[in-house]
Figure (cartoon, rainbow, N blue to C red):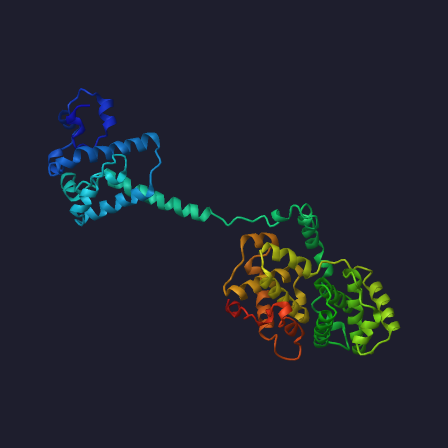
Length: 425
């Protein structure tokens, strides 16, 4: 192309000249196309139009024809310069900046005076202005769609335990699924105390609070405590008990749980001694036979403990979160009203409440939601009751769990502030 075509301030790209014929002269071609270049283009600085405007139109044709990837930052700067020029705010320094030697950047194009162009085009906005605005709107729309589509990934919590045979990574999902299918077998009616004529829920709370202290004194495993409470509730659901025998039921349930869970089991005499010799050895053994027959020897039931371990792993917990979660759920063992929740929901709500207590805001990642199958809304009712239990933990007479978790061994977890903001939701 000759020099006159390169410097001609038309709105047709360089490729268009090639398609119509390189021999056609610029002015004649513009007249045939019906363009009046005297109005808007006569005031353009001829020193800057030739390279800048033509390079912009060439870039535009390349963008449309070759689907070239563009830089959003450059496009936004280009639109900002255009808007400023439309309002007459562009400075001479910015005009000089627009003459950067890079002919392939959208920033380098010269902005045509929109007001003068409007006079010559009957008030119509230039096509490249409309194109740029439409392009920016499309960019914003795509960004919004991308933000909506982006989801927090579910983390593989078992990848680090592939070489640990005790983690049984190959079967852990099946085991958890089986626990969920059978957890209803370990649940009791939340109204079973209505069938008891000599004991009530307050007596049950006193018994379990005392057993928490006994469990701590014997330094038994966590799962032993949860199974002990489960055996007590399931037995009381089927058998009426006199209040003077209620402590015997508790001791026997702990003996059975120890035989099932512990490596070293306390002897019967130790349990008799800790009850201040309120019962004899024969009474303990008789109650043991009676209890296992009533429960039909069904001791292998999922308690909140098995779910707690899995959910804490999904939450990627540290020791502080773990201890606080167990403190909260042990407070729930004492509360008769918490029997209406299945073990898995109790465990999930305990972890959720502990996270809210430690971090002072709601936190429930997609990973732990996927592993627990509970959303925040499903946990909120139970979590609010847990916060209430946490608030009154150090008051009254039933302070076994509070004193246990107020020691150095349990990380002073009981001193954590309750997540009171959950009560306002």
